[in-house]
Image (cartoon, rainbow, N blue to C red; front, side, top):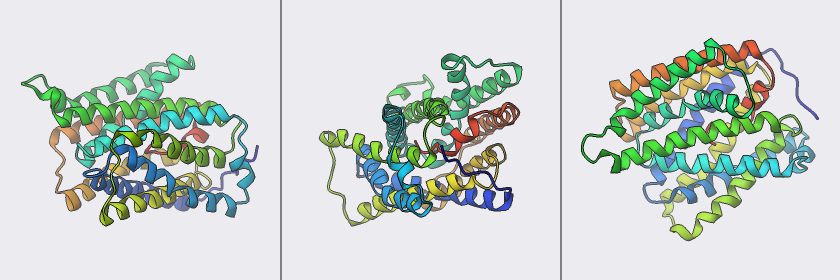
Length: 313
């Protein structure tokens, strides 16, 4: 299997990763604006469909079109698509109900759940460092969620509570994607994993067609198409960044998304992060960074799995 070797160009790698993270936040903001009028399943369709020409052009330019179009583990791609598409749909639905920084903060729970699922599904041993990281991250998640899940009154029935649970469910599903990709990268080329996710997400999103798709107006249509194109570009940039630097070096830059989300949320949606959310997010980030540090010591297939996992599904 072809696998491009890592070139040691840290400045290039970090620049590509930060631009990709910023573009993913722009994409999320566009989806958030569009889902005020468009169902989440329809948003998944546009995001996936319009990313495909970008991705195909990329793999053709790299001379990897055959590797992208000829999978060795077809059902593996189907399962990856099912988990990832479900995560994307839940995230998009949550974006319509929650502030952008809050969705981003809850999404940081993915590495925490990945450690837990790796222990349960792959039999990985969890020692003191990762147990501490998981505990720290889970406390942070509960702090972020607590205002939404408080039992005072009828809060559990509010849109915000439902949105928080959706995004939390998406984080668990993305962790499941991480576990699945650790196996998939053993036989599949990166180009195939990226392309077939977009393809399966496009097809699977059509299953939501009977549940209320709408004819979008010009603005919403532009936002949906733009989100797909920007999402495709961001996926290429984040994948390309791992050609110039190790995953362990680049992983902490994922957390720059909270800064971008706070800025975009404030400027576009007049959203101001609460002190509780910031405190909880800080603990989740601390747990995630501790896990990243531990993974750097362990090595293995985590780097390649991280390189082809879309932060939004």
